[in-house]
Length: 104
Image (tube, rainbow, N blue to C red; front, side):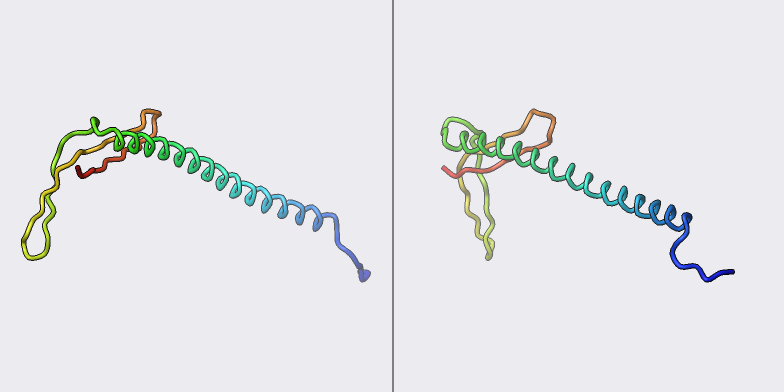
């Protein structure tokens, strides 16, 4: 056999196939990452809407359920706070619920 320099057509085809497979895999990873970023952004917007609703209810002193919270301190002493229980949920199909207690 002669001493050949260069690469054969089979080697070129195999290297192109390997590069193509790696390219498809990396594009799939980036696509999944972009979808997750988009989903997280939408969820953040929904949570901020629910937070605004809670803030509005806190400012409106007529909303909420009258309730009391008992805090047990070290030494077995207790303190009772009277206030309102504020709840807000989202109805757009995303499970977001914020519950807070506002002291009078």
